[in-house]
Image (cartoon, rainbow, N blue to C red; front, side, top):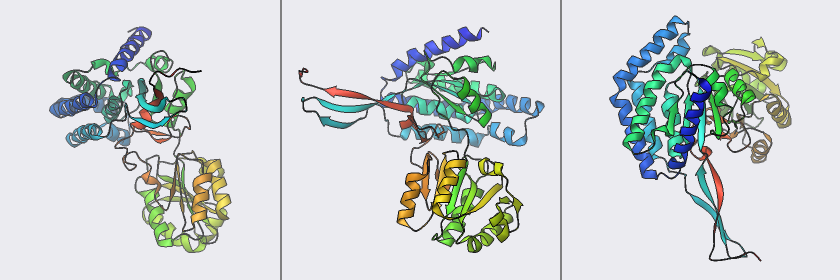
Length: 417
C-alpha cells in the first residue's frame, strides 16, 4: 500500500463528505445514529469474533491484563456502546444555532451561528469503543472524521467501522463521513497529522507519549491534554467530614483516570487534625502515600521527592504536602499541576473566589471531587476527550467543543457610507 496516496484519498473523501454532512438535518443525523446502534447490536456476535482475533494477538504479543481488559468486547460492552450512540442522538444539536443577535447603528442585525469544524482526525489506542463514540459525536456535530485506532484493536475497529458506514448509508448520508484508517503502518499517522489541506483538527486519545509525539509532529491544530495531575487543597476552615469524604473519592473512586487526585494539599492549621484519619482511610484501601517532611512528622509514610509533585500516578499512589495558606497552595498547583482539574475544600466565600480566579486549570472546583471533571457529569452527554489547551476548547470536549462559530449578518439593503 502506498501510504501517501491512500491517506490523501481518505482526506479527499472526508473533505467532500464534510460539506454534505454540514448541511444534513438533525433528523437525518439522528436517524443515522439509531441505524448505527441497531447495526452494532445486530452484529454483536460477529464483533466479538473479530475482537477475539485482537485478544488472541494481544496475548501472543505480551499485552498485560489491564490492556487486554480495555481491548475486550463483551455482549454487555457492545450494548453499552450502542446505548452511548443512542444517547448522542438524544442530545441537542448545536449546529445552526444562532446566538447573540443584536442590531447595529447601521440597521444590520448581527449574530453568531454555530458550525462544524469540518474534518476531525482522531488517533487513539486500545479501546474499540472509541471508534463508535468518536464517530457518533463527530456525526452529531456535523463533522466528517478519520479514525486511526491502535494496531492492537485493528480487527475490532474495522468491524465497528463497517457497522457505522452501513448505518450512514441506511440514513442516506455519505459513508465517507466516517472513515477508519485500514492500515496499522505507523507512517499513516505521520501522514495524517500533516494533512492540513484535508483535516481541520487532530484529537489524540491515549498515553502521554502518544500525545507528545502527535503534538510535536502535527501541522494540523491539536486538541490535547498530556497529564492529569489533579489537586485537592483542604483549607484551614474546611468542613472536616466533607473533606475526608471528598478526598477519599477523588483518589480512590478510580485510580487509572485523568481526573483522579494525585496530590493532596493540606493547610498547616488543620493538618494535625485532618491527616491521621485521612491517612488511615487511604491505608485501609492500600494506597501508597508519599509525604513532605511536615506530613511525615504527623503520619508515618514514605518521603516524597521533587518528582512526585509533577507525577501522574494513575495508580493507588498519592503525594501529600502541608502548605501554609492559600497563596502557597495556589502557587504549588500552578507550578506543578497540568491545568486539568483542581479543587478546594473551604467554607470561605472570598477564598473560594480567589481559588477560582487564580488556579489556571480547565476545571476548578469548590467542595467537590475532581472525579466530576467528565463530559457526562457536566451534562454534555458524552465527551471526545478533555482539553487542557486554552484555545478553542477547554475541559471536557463534547458537541459544542467540536463546533466553531461564524458571524452572520441580516440586512435589508443597508450599504456602508
